[in-house]
Structure formats: C-alpha cells, structure tokens
Amino acid sequence: MLHRHFDKWHHSTSHEKTTSHESSPKGGTGNTISTQSLNTSNLSLEDYISLYKFRIEAIFDHEQAREAFRHHLQQSLNEEPFLFYEAVEKYQKTRLEKNRANMANEIMSNFIQVNSKYELNLSMTIRNEIMKNWKQISEKNDLRAFDDFISCPTDLFNKAQDVIFTELRDDNFPRFIHSENFKKFIKKEMKKLKCNDPKQVLDQLGTMRVVTNSSTSSGHSVEHEHGSSSSHSLHDSSSNLSDKSNGGSSSQDDGDAEVETADDVEIQLKETKITDRPLVDNTSLYVNSKDYAMVKELISSLSDSSRWKTIEEKFGMKTLSSSNNFYLNPTDGALPVVCCSGLASGKHTEFFEMILSKSMEEMISKVCKRRVQLDHIEYDPESNIDYSNTIVYLELDSPFPFSKREAVVARTIIPDLYNKETDSFDRLIFIQKPSVHEEAVIMKDVVRVFIYSVFVVDRKTNDTLKYYSFDWIDLKGKVPKKLVEKLARLGASVLHKMMHAIVKKETSKDKDERLIVSAEGALEVMHENIKFLKEKFKSQ
Image (cartoon, rainbow, N blue to C red):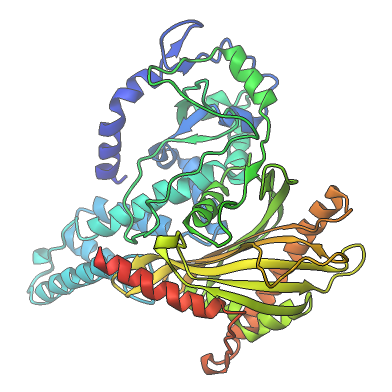
C-alpha cells in the first residue's frame, strides 16, 4: 500500500469520515441517510450505487475490487499506471537492498525509460531526474565489492508515484465507479455473499453520501481531491457553464444544506427528469472559448452513465448517445449528441492530422457536393474573437427526404495543454458549429441545416493517444425527429468505422507520402492559433 498517499488523504478527510459513517434517524442532524427507513426494494443497482461515496483506498484494500479495477483498466487499454503502482508497492516493501536494486532496474526498463514497454506519461523533468538518480545509484553500486554494501533508496520513484496516483485517483477511478465493470463486480460479490442487498458490498467500499435539495439524485458521487497536472491549460479561466432546463434556475443558500428524508430520496430517484442542454454559445457566430468550455464539459461527463448510453463497444473504441437532448437555441428543437471515443497507438499530432488528410477529404466529398471557404476571421480579443476561424459553405449530397440541403459553419482548431518540455500542445481540438454569412443567402428551394462537429485528440504517452468525436445535426424540413435521431446514431457508428479505416490507410504510408490539405482554411487557422497561444503562454 502506498501509505504516504493514503495518509495524506485520511488527514484531509478525517473529520468527514467521523460523521459520514454514522446513520441518523429521520429528522436528526447527522450527515448520513439511514437505509433502515429507505425502501430500497424498488431501486436498481445503479440507483443504489448513486447513494454512495467511494474512496480509491478502499478499492485497493479490497482484493476482489482491486482486481475488478485492474480488469477495467485492461479493457480501457490503460493498465500502465496500475502496473507501475503495484510494482512500486512491491519495491517499497522489499527490505533487502540488493533485491530492491534489482526491482528498481526492472521498473526503470519497463516504465520510466523512453519507449519502454509500459512507458508512463511523465514530464521530461521528472523522467530525467529519476534516470539521473538511478544512474548515480547504479554507478556507486558497481563499485561495491560485496552485495551487502549495495544501496537503493525506497523513495527513488516518489515523484513518479505522485503523478501516477493522481492520474489513477482523478481520472481512472471515477470512470471505473461509473462503469459496467463496477456493477458486474458488485453483483458477483453479492452472489458470493449470498445476499440480495448491495449494502453489504457497498459499505466495504464507501459511505452513504449526503443528499441535499440541490443534489442530483442520479449522479454518482466519487470523493477525491483535485491533483495538479503537469500540463498547463490556457483555458482554465473560462467560466463553468451551469446546466439548466428551459426557463428553470437553480440556487443554494449560503447556510447549512438541508438533509432530505429517505422518502424524498426515493421520489427523486424515480422522478429525475432529463433536461435539454445548450450545445453552443449562440451569442457568437464564431467558435470561442465558451464553445470549448462546453466541449470540455461533454468530455468530463462521458463517465456518467445517467448522461450517456452505449450504442456499441469494442476493444479500444466506444460509440455513445447522450441521454439529454441539446439545442442551439432554446426555441429550436433539441436532439441527442453522438460520441465516438477510443484509445490508439501513435503520435497524437499525427493522428489529429488524419482529419486534414487527403483520405478524409475524399470521404467528405461523398456527402458534400461542394465546399467553399467564405471568409477567414482573425483572432481579435478586442472584438471578442478568441480564436481564428474559417467560415465554410457546404452543399450536401443527400438522398430524399434529405435532398436540397446546405449548411454554413464556423471552424477552428484549438491547441491546448501546453507542454513546456516539448514546446508543443498535448491536446488538439477541431470544433465546427453552425454560422451565417452575407455571401450565403438562403434560397427558397433549399433547406438550411445545422451541423455541429468536434474532434479532440489527447496525448496519453509518447506513443499512445485518446480521441473523442461529438456530432449533432438538425436536418430541418418535415422530417420526423425519431428518424433524424436514428440516422444520427447510425451515421456516427459508420463514421467511426470509416475513421479507423482512414487511420489504418494513412499509417501504412510513409510520413512523406501523407498529404495534408487545407480543409477550407482549417489548417491555416490552426497555425495561427498555435502561434498566438504559445506567445500568450510564454508571456505569462
């Protein structure tokens, strides 16, 4: 067990833990809901889980939960942090210096060295410091005449530990709690214990959460601290967008939150309504920082099973549909967003270039008769233009009943998560949202449709990446909403497979053979945004 991480955790939460484990009668002052008064017979396992707070140390202390977590990471192609965590645990428990030195050598060659089998996503500063210290230790040990004089400190990997523990706690652990793997584990443990009440299992992993009037009953609560990141975002100052239903509002008093009764909780679980959500900043014709903030919120919500339904899942890739509908304007119709995500091998910059490849252009040509760049909008903070944009006209090549469709969109490519070690960005984001332009007059016999597309690529390690795509389309005209939703989901699944085919085709080529196109000005605005955001970061 990495006690120094968990001791820090327990110190910061010791007061809460003394109260959260105590049940309170109805009308009492405790922070925990009494399950004795809560009728759980009508609750699904997912609803029952949503009543709990979970802690990562409890998962690691529970042998079967730990293995379930490991299995989840294996399926997600992200097992490296867990393997490193276990290797360091074993390393720290080893008492004989010689044996610890041998284990350190294995950890270095498997996790720390560049291009190693399980290379970790560490900053070059931390990686180089560990490698420098290990070199000095090895050189001293080589001069020892006897094995009994070999020395190897237990804190050699402490800085890497801190980074990896933060990644496990803040990223992997919440995703696991919201996953089907966690529910399967709970069911398996219930069967082993021969019980019908999930409480016997859940009480070993967490505590009943506090439910207030402002709480969302269906949202899982995962208690964790927010760790620092080695990458720096230039967009952290963007205001968080609160989700509200049409005409609704939410507020909370500054005083103590009122604890709801068990009956209130059960009613909320049954009657929670899915509300429509805004998709873009409709006050601007161009893609701006608020639009990007909304994209980040979409990404952060993907682990919430109450907000996303899985359409298709395969090894390393997943297609989902939002439970909520999204709108451009509250008065317009709302439709679901379809998301495709996955892990892949390769450089994140080269993978992102696939959307600007000749192969992608050929694929788009199959659904677009004509694409014309109408305008180029330069970055201008005084005019509230956060990024350079390109305005594009699209004439769609679609069959009946979707014939005679066109669209006008604003596009940009935003670099984010600046890495000062590599002087580059660890995230690239393509955003396309509906817009208008004076050169694109709406004709009487043509239907103007609204298209929203996002493509995000994140660097995980030097040779591993995570990608997300979000698509939303309103075909307008007299088309049944259910048909539009069905076609959107089907189209996203097809596009996901086509994208993988393009990646396979492009990666089989030599780098010099890959052709990058302008994509109606998208390439140019990407270079402009990279330039001014680098300057902005360095000036700070």
